[in-house]
Every structure is written in structure tokens, then in C-alpha cells.
Image (tube, rainbow, N blue to C red; front, side):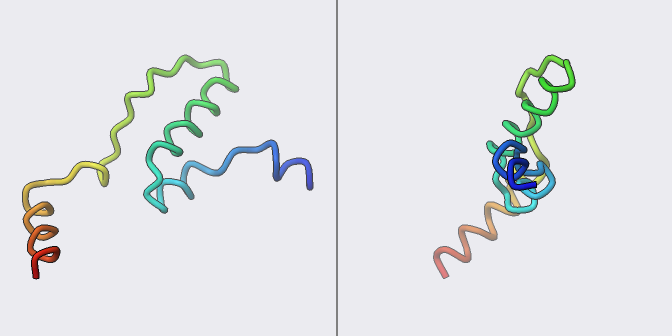
Length: 64
């Protein structure tokens, strides 16, 4: 089990929950490569995209 800690990548679900999107993409690419699939690394996660409403809220909270 000690060896697995250093060899296995972090879970994509864990990385996504921590909003580490680039690391999530890398973990998914590693898993896909291990399973013999090609990856194009063009994942865009829904929480990564900031809507106009979200941007307005963020700007108001930064200025407020």
C-alpha cells in the first residue's frame, strides 16, 4: 500500500472538487493513456466557465 501512494495519481473527482482543473485534466489524461485511449485535452468544466452574472457578483464583492 505504501508504494501505491507514490505511484497512483490523485483522483480526478477529488481534484475537481478542489477546483484544480489543470491537475484534473492531467489525471484524466493519465488514466485514458493507461487504458489505451487517445486524449485531446480539451476538457472545459462547467464550474470553470464564469457567466456574466457570476462575473458581476465577483466584481461587486471585490469592490464592496
